[in-house]
Length: 480
Image: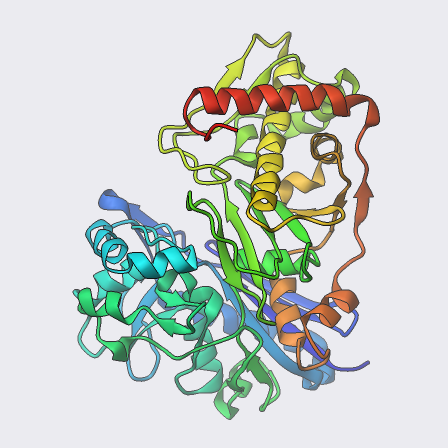
């Protein structure tokens, strides 16, 4: 018995809600599907934003019903969602039309203007707008606003407003790529002025964990949450996933290995990357969360039948290091740990058989992970201790051993680390725990330490050096 917190995760395909106790145990959970985004020509990607609140409401109601009288112990909640998804809302906070999703890239002209006008600011913050940034989408919306638009909101703002019953602030994390300067603590007004975006469209911005308001009487009836439950500012799904692995203190890093490879950590100072591959979110406590998201990742295995993975993992473990060097990128172009618009898959040598080729793919993704850590260390953000890991790829013990051997440091697998837990940690910080570090210590699972295979470290280092050499030869990576 005791105080509880809820984490709300609004992903692309579904909504997940988890209620956790003070030590991180899940005491209730629910999920609901969301309609798939409609993607069309011109880089458009839209989703029916009117489906968000019913899905969140129903998940919360299912959790509180399951908890019964204990639902009164839920003291706070926080919301996490995709980065830079935006939608215009009316005076009641209802979405007006479809949301422009995180991967909508229609606003190329607006992005070019933003890059040019805000050049000094972007150099200072390390955030360069693109057609895929929330800033460009907000600028596009400003020229196509539905009648009755009061504000442009990020996904969590829409839901928090429904819970509180009035307009709320957005958080620095969701606003980061929407034109918010986390260094100066202000919107990039000169850029929005040039793009003719009225200031009234932009919300107030607060740090994650700040109290946005309390659950209203009306929302309490709909969700079963106790009236007065605090609604706290959250962070983007990538940041919440990082926190859920326990990477909350300086020097701690995490790799989330899903379809793509996302690597983030904590540094005392803001990281400046002249190449633009690394960017930094603001930590709730005022330090920084540098990292990036690659195009490579678990997608390297997308053509492998899931039923074969266990057998191939076992064979790859027995075989040892691959005889070839593989960069198993799907599609074209890379954004992290190096920027190369024309990057494409390559294989150095001819694989002996299918097992050799499969193992080389696992190694190739791990080479990118090592390069990312080395790049961040060179920029002043070194990793200390084991690298935490989560995501679908982390479920493979064989892959974790290969990664540990290539990194020459332990990999810490954290089971149950997901965005909803990360949101719950933010809700717990300042409510049932004094700060984020204390919340993570109490609530994040301990994890399983996977050590390097000593006999493989040297040979894998040689393959990694060949990998770097090929990247430089192709012009994708600067000379050493």
